[in-house]
Length: 307
Ligand code: SF4
Image (cartoon, rainbow, N blue to C red; front, side, top):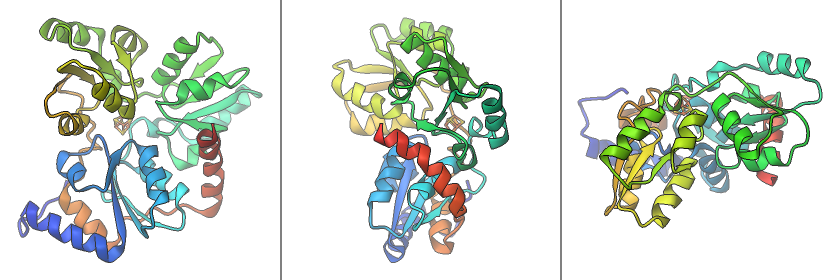
């Protein structure tokens, strides 16, 4: 996160607002980025939800405050727009665990299998797969597929889907999110002792024993809905702690306890107000994808959206 002593946060926020109008830009913030970035965003949400929203706006410029694969997805859905990733080295450890060559090798070893790809993957990987999914719709997408399924890159999400659908023909890739993979059943037991009666929800990127020990395994969008509809006043949150800011904002009377305070994605925390300002000032860093990549990567995303 870069900063500049010449401007206060309030001044930067004003400058960003003015630049945003000049550029006809929209600022998107993932639920895990720092609070001050969520607060200046036009939309907060998960990566796919944000990209779909941005494609629907009349903005010429999308500033994607998140990690690279998310900005790539926005570019795939809006190739005519300028898509900016303010921190160029904000990556996703899980997305980087697989490349297109590894997908091609899996397809060679399992001809006839359908390749399902979690959206947390690079554009290059998406060009090689049959259909994409999110953590919210993964089970729904896989349920419709007959025969063997290769599921990349998140092995935990694959195993959670296989368990839910009671299927033994889903082959999980060995990738994982280092943040969610760190959660344990012991952490859940500890929080249940400390906050008796508080519902515990976790993300489906967590290992299956953890999702089984929780009250619910939910995508970030589903977590927001779950809290809105649940009468409890305290919740234990098993995902990256950035989402707690949004949960608190939307539910000021409720209390949110992280399953562990260690659940911090370093790449999501790289961005600061100064980075957003520089991105808008210099129109940098622009996501560039060639036409062929956009076309090939769009197919599996469209197939997912159509259901
Ligand atoms: S939280 Fe996990 S899946 Fe999300 S960007 Fe960070 S490493 Fe990737």
